[in-house]
Length: 219
Image (cartoon, rainbow, N blue to C red; front, side, top):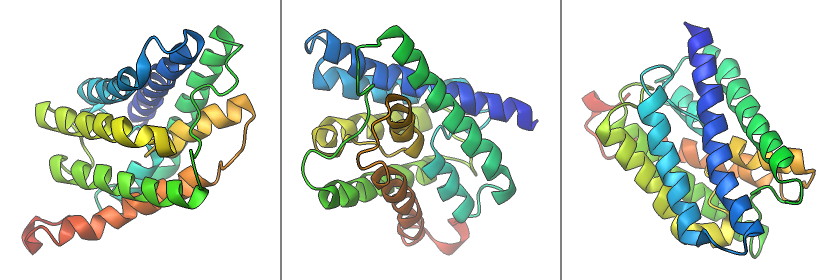
């Protein structure tokens, strides 16, 4: 039922943003106790955990770019996009709101910002999201992500991309993950960058996936 899928996406995205950006907030207020590696691992591990938890219910997209990518690839009904996107955004906003209540002195709340030029981060986010979506398309069945292979592969990609690209662009790969902290904190610098770049990246992954597969195995 759609209500189960809606709440699975809401809760899954809440936990993803709460844990991932929460690690950044705690790292900030404790003077770097968690560290960059710890933050990257947190993002990767929470994504894997949420796929185990909600993959058989909603597919555990947890990411508007992924849902849009699945729809463009023909693996997900476009009519279901409004429910998924709204659930993901509600989950992200609720997570950032909770962190704001818990840590009112954190002005960024784990938001993503370019370390250098906006153009550099824009193209980096396209590439990062394309790699992530290519992996998701390769290990998922339809729009469902479930099982050891999917959880480990997708969580690992999120973690490794956060590891090397986090200091440059924030390694968002997820519009909800970037918009939640930005909207709740009231800091709108470069807010346009992450939704556009990540959605473009997810769509770019579709032809890349198809050219590596025989015609009968494409969506």
